[in-house]
Amino acid sequence: MMKNLFFLTLILLFVSCNYNLINKWENYDESEEIKTNATIENKRLQFKRIQSISNDKNQLINGFEREIFNFLENEYDLTKELIHEKSIPEIQQSVIDGKLTYYKLSLFYLTRIYLIEFDKESYLNSIISINKNILREAKNKDKIKNTNIYSLHGIPILLKDNIGFKGLPTTAGAHSLKNNFTDDASIVKQLKDSGALILGKTNLSEWANYFCYGCPNGYSAMGGQTLHPYGRKILDTGGSSSGSGVSTTSNLAAASLGSETSGSILSPSSANSLVGMKPTIGNVSRAGIVPISSTLDTAGPMTKFVIDNILIYNAINDFDPLDDYSVENYDINLKEVVENKLEEYTIGYYKSFYERDSLYKNAIDFLIEEGVKLQAIDAPQIRLEGFAKILDEDMRYDLRSYLFFYGSKNLKVEDISSIIKYNEMDSVERAPYGQGIFKKIIQDTMSINDFEDLKFELMNKGNEFFDIPMNKYNLDAVLSINNYHAGYAAMAHNPCLTVPMKLRENNEPAGLTIIGKSFQEQKLYEIGYFFEKKYKGRTPPKN
Image 1 (cartoon, rainbow, N blue to C red):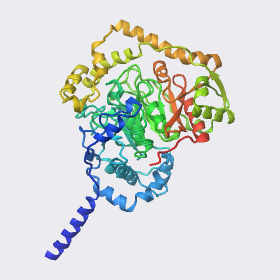
Image 2 (cartoon, one colour):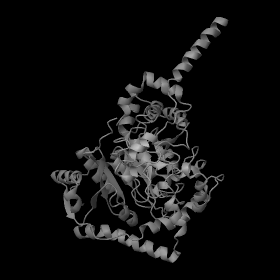
Image 3 (cartoon, rainbow, N blue to C red):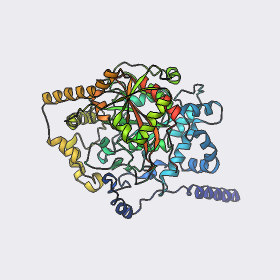
């Protein structure tokens, strides 16, 4: 008996020692890195802080140490071949063929998160929190036979941390919302209904980039500074859906959701060689998402491939009575996307971009060589003066409304004024870049009538910016770069799809952004799929 106990003790000690090989994260002195970054020409990359001091990174893997250790020892390399840089249909085919399980799929991403985010030479600060039930939920998905390669069944997806998910706080990156436990946002319920798994929450520019002046894209108190996988501390991650872009391009999840007011999906998708869809306002519910502007906000998928983007868009594209802008809409027809050769389309491209941007020129020339009918256009000289006032007035009201209807009842804040006061109690931790935008919002107000007049004026200007060339040449869409025309598309409520168009000389990805008229997502996906398939512009990060 004593002998058996002795051997059992040895085994337990051996196992315990092995699990201790999973390194825990310890914050380190980053002062030298901060000094080095202070010399970078781009002031938005002159960081004041990189690591979060408000959130323990170890909670990302706590409870998963044994599974991660065993997976690394025995299966990671073999499984990687089936998952890394694979589309959702390809992953589903491996499951159907018996080569992969949803449990191993989720564990692969958890292991990869550990490998990248817990290495001081490679960490990206792309993730704020992890669903602790993910492996159990994945096992349950394995019990249900799936035969559809276009299904989201069992597919792990990350959410930008301004999107509600029951079980994890929805922080918007802010210390004041660190205990904001909410119910699922409407689009999360739709994802779950489609069979998807929620892997966790991604870092973001705090308050979706509408909090402080000049602060870096991808910084939040809760997540620290998101770093660019194509150039850590050198390139701009884009924002505000920074963590969604960085994690997805780094293969830390199959896909992610971002949100956009003006450029917050397009910017990080383009910056990370991803496909990003900013839908027509009203096609995707905003209920349960921390807002900036009920006039302009939307959510959308960020993926490595167009086909994956469509699958997620179809899952979250539904009418929701909880969103006043919500409309009945139709799913994207996959067959038409795959088969369309663009023979009937006329697409505009901007002469000014063509003349000065070599990546854009190469993409346009390629499409012309492929037989696509393209028309050179000039951008109308239209300015959106007062655009920021739309955001100011909406956020003052919409954030208070969100906190009342969706926020946790235990929060210590109820509006922008109380958030400012909360942060001022410890601005070093909670607001190292200041709160300039929030302070402007509460100081500079306008009447409801003036606000409605301004909104009407700018929405007309946004539509004119695209309608003038599109009507003149009978265009089906126009081609832009990254988020260059995001403000106009926001005011027009027009959909945008950005698709990778390779890397610049400094290793920075860029996107060809396709902009259409409202509710014409089908056309954008057809153009995007054609370009992706022929041009093959996605380049994963080398590390």
